Image 1 (cartoon, rainbow, N blue to C red):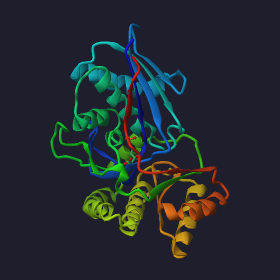
Image 2: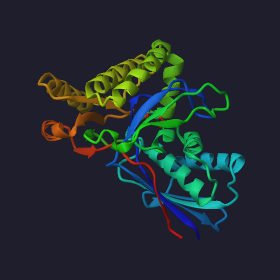
Image 3: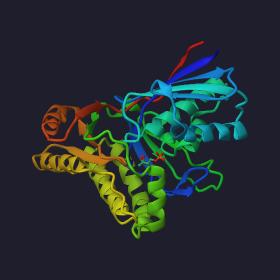
Image 4: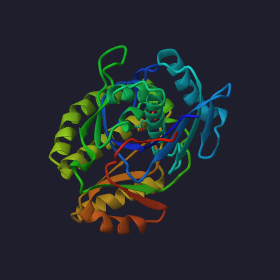
Length: 328
Ligand code: PMV
């Protein structure tokens, strides 16, 4: 049995993807920028199987029908549009909880796309693997690449210009750290997939947010090129506040955050006032992701760890995606 093992990392968007212009091809309404989290990973092994059906195991146990649904529909798409003519055994483990706003679908589908490309010798380049991963989960197209990554929304109806490109490689900004503050590992009650459709359909702020956020992207890219944490961090926070306004004006109102989220954000604001350069964002979940420099990690960690409600903190650098091993 031929197998491929791939390690990928989830990514945190510093400028979010939230809404699709095409729900089948998973084409976004706007571009987005992210960075991979080196300390969190997905470890996926894909094997050609002789069983009559695909076998999907997540974190050591057979996936429930609900968990496996998105993977089955991704595999059905691959059987229609790519050269997939065999059944597969897919075994995937995360080093972090799924559905808690830690982007497990991003690293999961990125790993699957990278593994299929190698296992089945499709010889797709990074651009095409990113497009393939996007068909599983939009944000997965960004987890195919390392360093800071820009997913441009593209204009084409077929989505062939909607894929992620590297802004700068992993080692471009070696002092940068991403601190993930865990306040809860409970699964969210409205998935990102549903939440973004609700926002598009109901938030009166949605269209203005899309336009403003698209204009912010060159400023973020410029800040990354200049390694200007102040510029990147302030823009990331502004972006987050505008996105939260979209969530709060959606109907039903979307609440992915807890009191723990807000107390971490308040503590970060206090650190900022005392002159420490650290900046916050979240995914669609209660945990907080911070950007800071290596020199501030100790002080920031000590302050954040002491807050009631903080369960753990995880310190990452920009991740190197995707490590591949041929097992046989
Ligand atoms: O790829 P999805 O469908 O899981 O969407 C995730 C979108 C966010 O993570 C909430 C934001 C983003 O840009 O990563």
